[in-house]
Length: 281
Image 1 (cartoon, rainbow, N blue to C red):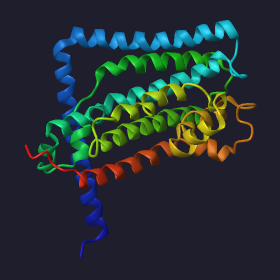
Image 2: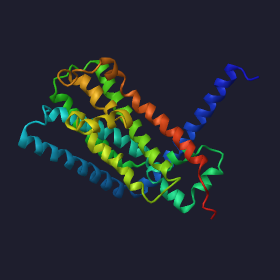
Image 3: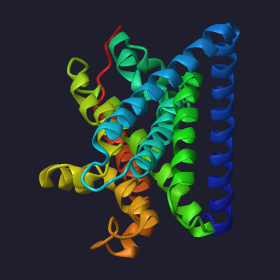
Image 4: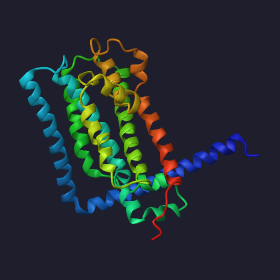
């Protein structure tokens, strides 16, 4: 009978081995993209410029109308920055799931199944998208600008809550990418509809949920919990009136919903793998 200590050492060894292999995957992807450094730099700058243009459009909107249902530009910028940082992290390391349908369509997923490694680890290590550093830098710049303009007492707990919101958001978007990839086990022709939740979710999360209709608020709180990494924790940072009517306990613990959402999506992935039918080629 295996003792608890031996079981812990076994699990620790397996985790350490997986992390080592994942770093090797990322290193290979990193070096391959740097083979064409000028191209990588231009794509990164282009990604930064594209997302910066989106924020400039919001700035123009507020320059014309002043506020949006009581929300000011620095407050919206806080939502914008957190969302872009979270999605940049998720998309940068989750590119393998974003393009997973090609593996299924071409029959290449069969090769992953015969290897003595987790399919999750192999798909996650397919590609590290360096060009998403552009969105990350842009999101961080907007976030810093908003933090300076807002009258928020940036104590250590508040900074931790902000970082937790970004991490929770990254987990949530990563979960959406995993869920989209899982659907490829049943269909590869209608995955574009899922972009309503991924890329459409970015646009939704850039604004507080109070600007949307009640049914949409419920959907993005209870089904796809976007509110748990932006509206709830950021409401705590901004204070009244934006935090009115919400329990502080929910506001401080809400980012963990993104982690829980990712864990659920990973379990759904396992179900999809069990239902996978080889192309036979």
